[in-house]
Length: 253
Ligand SMILES: *[C@@H]1O[C@H](CO)[C@@H](O)[C@H](O)[C@H]1NC(C)=O
Ligand SMILES: *[C@@H]1O[C@H](CO)[C@@H](O)[C@H](O)[C@H]1NC(C)=O
Ligand SMILES: *[C@@H]1O[C@H](CO)[C@@H](O)[C@H](O)[C@H]1NC(C)=O
Ligand SMILES: *[C@@H]1O[C@H](CO)[C@@H](O)[C@H](O)[C@H]1NC(C)=O
Ligand SMILES: *[C@@H]1O[C@H](CO)[C@@H](O)[C@H](O)[C@H]1NC(C)=O
Ligand SMILES: *[C@@H]1O[C@H](CO)[C@@H](O)[C@H](O)[C@H]1NC(C)=O
Ligand SMILES: *[C@@H]1O[C@H](CO)[C@@H](O)[C@H](O)[C@H]1NC(C)=O
Ligand SMILES: [Cu+2]
Image (tube, rainbow, N blue to C red; front, side):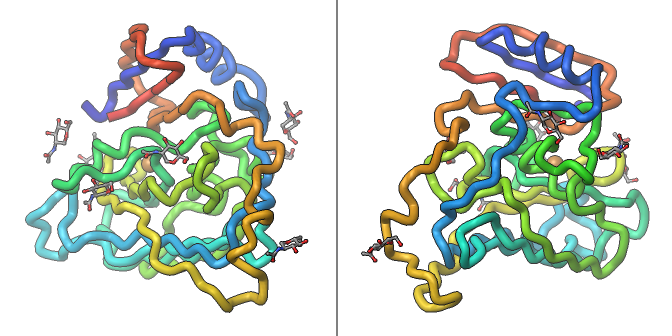
């Protein structure tokens, strides 16, 4: 199951994705490069805290990876500040990858349920992200843009211009999740983002000014949802067209 891709396409975009995947670098999403989100509501903090039980090996005596990803819109509203902290990683199988995945974790903790990466611009998996050009990467490909997990503990802080805390646009991640993978892309553990606070006084910017959150020219607002899995080297591809709204989904299990 880990080496198979299930691709579901209504719009027939799959061939376009595949064509882009095999061509030029830098790659551009079908909906263009990722756009900087400039009207994130300040102070909205979303945190994904890893569960105590590992998805990959629930009886692992070492227990699960510990840690969290906390993300808050910068006080300017431009981009999102991420604070990443992981420890107690497996002693082999790295360097580990982590991404914002498009769907939340099922109640039973099964990380398969998070489906693929957050990819509102329909950029697809391959070629891999060039971290020098983060706007050309999948919005959710955090380890692609900012580095794989290469230490234990692993701590990273960065600002991502493309993810958003503004509900209603494709780049919004507050209703989605983080998934950690082994280097071979097998899913290790995952966690929902949840709203941990909506600060009212940090940074000095008003967080209650609704005019600050009205929509900028964000063309992805009505873009079809695109999620992709991880699997540049996958060997099995199955594709089928399904009449389910304007949705293109490529899923690696
Ligand atoms: C996407 O960004 C890359 C790198 O800056 C650029 O070469 C490319 O032309 C951009 N594509 C579009 C459609 O703007
Ligand atoms: C991926 O790597 C992990 C850790 O080395 C290993 O346990 C697992 O079997 C691998 N999965 C696949 C599909 O090879
Ligand atoms: C993740 O969030 C979804 C949507 O709110 C919820 O149904 C699910 O139970 C949550 N998963 C876990 C493991 O808490
Ligand atoms: C997780 O969900 C997938 C897809 O529904 C299923 O094949 C797999 O057996 C589940 N894994 C566990 C540990 O429940
Ligand atoms: C990544 O993009 C930079 C800037 O355009 C370029 O110099 C570099 O060659 C690219 N790296 C790869 C691996 O394509
Ligand atoms: C998450 O929120 C975005 C923006 O509001 C919406 O487009 C998307 O369908 C939501 N996803 C889930 C899994 O609820
Ligand atoms: C909201 O912000 C705009 C632009 O800075 C300003 O003109 C307006 O007075 C503010 N409204 C409130 C209720 O703070
Ligand atoms: Cu992932």
